Length: 205
Picture 1 (cartoon, rainbow, N blue to C red):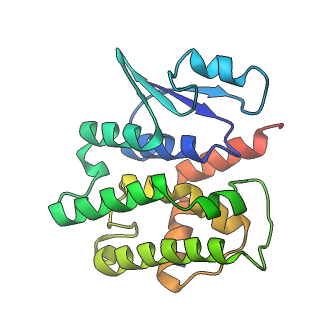
Picture 2 (cartoon, rainbow, N blue to C red; picture 1 turned 120 degrees about the vertical axis):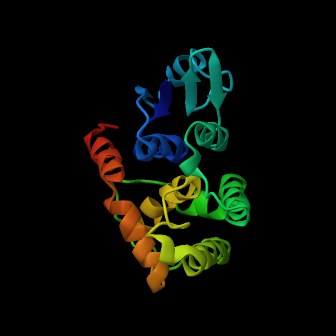
């Protein structure tokens, strides 16, 4: 398999399937395309029909869009979704909510892994997005925390979908309740997340 990703420091969408693949122990070739250059669009179009990253190439199968790739990976590795139907439905719902929602958070707190920018006065819209995300995390940890340190006990695509928010909350010094703080610390300490961070720090843009 090949995974086409963009600049690590900024490409939150790329991080999601990349992390899922790493956590699932899947072997893949990484194709990194620098973003924000005049050649970016053309380079991505060599692989992705949407002209955007990420894009997964698995033989003759081409999958673009973070959530679609994560769902495809979950068909290969069943542990990437909870085994119980009710939990699986919740995992899919919160993954889709992250995928489609939180526009104020994305605009007001863009992913910047290398930075440290204490965010003293977020707008009401950003605060509402933060509150909703924390509510999701708290609910999952309350329901499934006894099974392990991730949102549903073991690592799933739900954790992968919220991974960029981990870097956002650390970058902007967002204060969190205990269960959410512990999850963020667990995620940030993952070897794969540290590998992503090291890659972001090494980038020159």
